[in-house]
Length: 290
Length: 314
Image 1 (cartoon, rainbow over the protein chains, first blue to last red):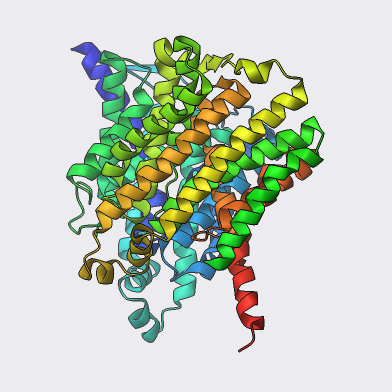
Image 2 (cartoon, each protein chain N blue to C red):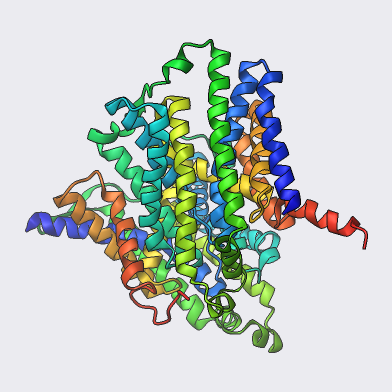
């Protein structure tokens, strides 16, 4: 029973991490209908910038986090204005190819600049274990989970409560009508992508303090994020959270009770099963397939 | 149709004559790589161009073919003229399974689930040590006696001709496919799914058949790869092969028959030429993919075709 509780807590924690890393992806897909294959790479860049700022430049954690948000946001804004805006309205395939090209470029350029070595973002909290009854959690993990929850709530409020968020939702419901009432839609698209990129970067930096920040981690992150997003339904925040938790818990239980070799395959098996039986996700109501 | 047929015949004819002119091991090796890539690109192009979906997990079939050939020849001692066809058949079966599931999905879902399948197969190859020897891979896939007994140049040229036969077969299959009702149906579905359905084309069945054909060709290429490199590891399921397939087909022009010949020639030569910039190479490839999507959406052949139309007498 104790083992089960411990595995469950581990799973919930890594599930929260998965949810955070999938948030940017689900946002960009849900609002812009762009499937961002460079998501994992933005995550990786965020982690590496976080590492460079905290351990090379010696900045404190929260300043670095803010800088990462700004840098990745600006990068996302530029990516949208320079690349994605050119293929807007040409269907999904052009966007998919463009972001695949972008991800190849980012990974290999980063490998060139930073190399393959795994780096760690410095965290102001120690790795000291906390004993909560039969369950052991480290301080740093608890802190990062709390920050995850905070960020998810902040992103949700940004989209639901602010003027920019309203403009976003209006644009993606009906671009033409949004233009007619004076919303600058090109600006809104760029800001949405910037937000998606910033969320990816923040996730990269936070998780770079728990796991590692490494140049070639992006592919796996993208895949896991896709798994989470499909499990929860594309474009749904609540879905991303639940999808992340499902994935985290299933992986932890499978790894604890069955075998560790195939842990990474669990997510893919879940996705394949999911798309066969509920192709529109657990929460989304509308069907995605023709 | 005329242009395509002539182009393919002349290109393959020249390729068949090439070994009489080239007496250099390195150039023969590049020739083998080009022919191998032509087979891959032809197979990838069938799905991209004639189903209109984007299979990011196409390496699944390459890997299944390569592992099938490697296991058959090292464990059972099967000769090369059996292993490559069996590799194709096994890939076809895999294609039937994967296609049967994924072709019900569209757009991003198709892309991601095909990628998931390739990733699952890679994990299986990594973990099923009893069958695949795990991360170590299978080394020492035997070269047939009649090839192994020759000097190195002769070996390369023998492989070149095996590759030529496979590439020629693939292109022939693609040619017959494109100008059959199946290919025309595929184009109709790609252009307008609902109109196609209204005139009695069954998109799912057509797409599945196309998918299986593409998987078979890719399996042949995989079997050939296993014998030529004489080593197969889990990385055959990896993303780099997919990337080069994407670049070759996009650059050549998707949905054309000439594109999968032009693309591999350009890409393999470019790759060799850029070998001096080893580390920069893949970054440049990323830029090329983006540039092609933005500026040459129909690929080199689409560009050429447009120029031809512009200058054609009215």
